[in-house]
Image 1 (cartoon, rainbow, N blue to C red):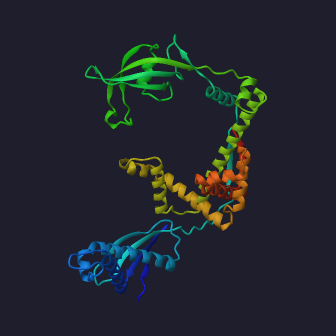
Image 2 (cartoon, rainbow, N blue to C red):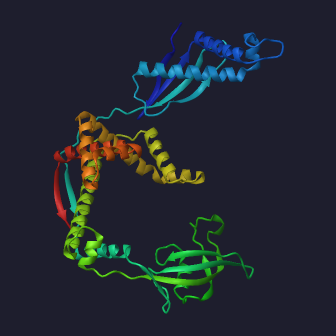
Length: 417
């Protein structure tokens, strides 16, 4: 039997276009196989089950038989293309321009998204700046205040108007044609954007137990499209106001927060954490500079299929509505292209320099995580495996190894601001 004929009909970054021709003998054999499948399983008037002639079956189930034939031959062509072209696909192929006629070869075009062949002529010799923000006393104080708020009880306020940061218990009732409708109760922390600005302004003019009407304007991006840009009157009833009482910053507070002997020890730990975070931000900026420099020194395109996959993944993660997909794609395309180029650069260097994460690397990283958590490596591994995050951890290890290698190829100047 004559083999399937596969020829390249075009190529673009990350995509190979193939022309496929399936010989008549294979088409006829696939048709006979599909017809036999139905002949053995259907029962038609005047025929015993399994004894229906093929010509009758073909007339009775032409669309189903054709669908089976196309599915089988496209799958066979895909396997043949993988072997013949030595493809490294990153997605299922797209089939178009399919022509299926009785007594003729089956022909179609197959577009295959593949891992592009990347050549990087320069990956080092760059001058980079690691900017590390200074940690100030004010930053430490802000972090301590956040710890205080996390442990501060809410205390009722009776003889004062609400302020930003207070927790207000309210009932909001729409007024339509001068008549109040059904109201709804809310718990609102003022100043955090949980309610419309007009409503927050009204609440902060009231005392607990008071009721007032307010005219509110809905912004153009309001979730309920029917209210966007509209103005309506609502009735605001303020039931209760609570305010947080911050605990004093004392040695006792430090001991409640964690394993700290004194407030000074807590302050020192907070400063160390902020300095470590500043260092991580500086390292992340160096990595961004490296990718920018490598991309500029090695001009290449981000393959369209890979960019589309990234955009689709983010659109799904952000739950972008169908009617907003086109706008989202236009705005997000540069971000997706940058992500794809970064992944290609890191993947290329990891493979060329032998820097991919090994099982030993993974075991060492899991042991580090277990030590920080006060747990056992086996439990951490099981937890990561259950959450399907092992691949993510391997990718993180590979990234670290690649960027360590890249940083060694360039000059980095630390700059404290």
